[in-house]
Image 1: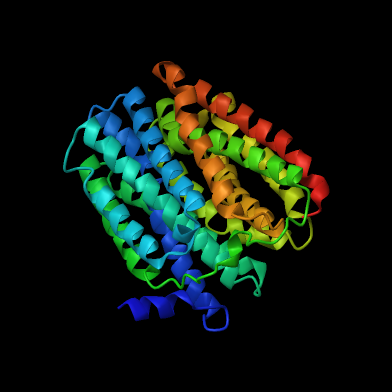
Image 2: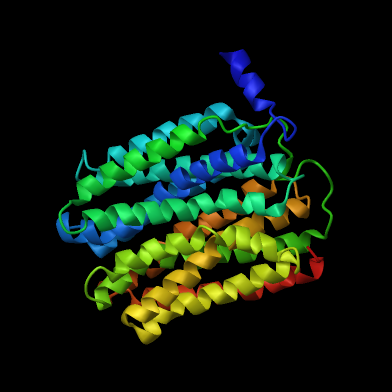
Length: 387
């Protein structure tokens, strides 16, 4: 068994079919992020209505998930071998599915906090291992291949939103979590054989930085602020829309977020052929801020759907470009460092807006807009890097 795993870990671009790696990586991203992280967003209104979950407790559950993500990302930064471990990757897939399936088993906030924490930690490990593997193995192939791997997040979001939408009228919040676990399990089976190279070069390696470190600091600062701003919208967008729009517009909007996100990373990768990623990174942040501002400013179904499209079309591209820029700058451990900063931002996001939630979600979305704008401003410091 150990010999088998060793052989799987030394897979390289010469022995891997790009389309197969894309399918495996996209399935891993769908399980870890699209379902494991973000299924909570469309389920939250169901838990508010059926399980008596208060807005404050809902924010605490979100924070527990993001705290777990931070711990998982920090672990891969402090123990670099985790970012190249097939065993850690597979263990995280199993634990992630279990954490989703256990949510209905103990209908109390205490156990929920634990399960969401575990899901967050597993999501981080899966994301970092997968991102490192595909950035390394596909670096000799067209950029859009990596974009389609990240599209798995959007596919997972659309799938989780569709599941909750189907259960909305006749199902329960418990069934929503069980079906989410089933969907994540299917994705995990597809992602199981992802080749994880040893000596993975996607994390920056040991080479000297190709650019001054201050440009990486600008990237890391902007990406961390994006973690704060985007996660507020990513957590409360559906609840905010449903609070002011009758019917199932909020859940439909979340499905639309996923559908817009699915091709977005490949689109931003294609645009990088014509413009520096650093410029596109700032532009994507600006577009995201415009999208998140739509529901609190205008309200109504049209604003909700516009927000869904613009949010979905940007947040994955921003993440992919940040990791690609860090990798191109040749900063050692760039993927883990950037993901850790991003996870700190995500952990802070719900805490920042929790005091506002008793009066509704409108103010929270305005805070999200302001922080995303700040991320764009901070990121302009790296545009001279030329990457």
